[in-house]
Length: 264
Ligand SMILES: [Zn+2]
Image (tube, rainbow, N blue to C red):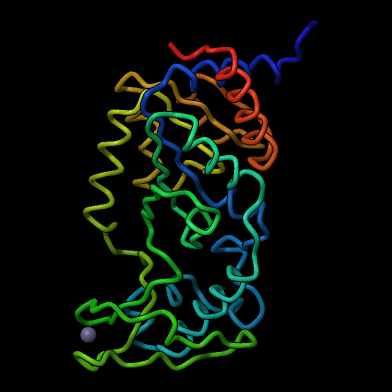
């Protein structure tokens, strides 16, 4: 049977994954968007459309207008909670069981990988589900945070330990990435044998370096994306299409390969 280019690439990707002991998956906004979650810029609609991203995603903006900034995050958290992980998330959960070692490094703050059931998830940019105080970063329980019914301003609670305001535990502009998670992500990129790059534009640094680190260290890089990106040049194999279609197909092919005893 003559294979289409897409099928040929998918079977190459399957062989690479079957041969790998350590697989690293990186995911970006495209992965979330397929589950209906607006990207950072897409979320600047309605009440928030008139604000500069700098005003909504910096500590300075938060200190100037805490209720406005906190309300924006509370509203996005509500959108995320209403979203359902698509088939691509479940495929990554299955992949975790099919390869000896797999980790996911995500730039997304929606927690969908964990919700789908992935166990080893590194959240480079933090999470909408975690909170801490702005002065000392004392953790604050998320279940004590209101989920507003509409896109309104929302007064943040105060930290019981130091009295400063509670903020979302996401990485804002001009902030550094969480150190422990970043170190682990960079180590994983340098030591994996196969890397799946899913739904990332390749424009957000420093996360955009990860595929290049992996390639330079000898890993096979597989991109899964409907569109060409900055990462495409680093990829050995490019699977063009949505994650919700490509990832389940890869996992199905991998299962077939496992059944044939293809793993050495
Ligand atoms: Zn505090």
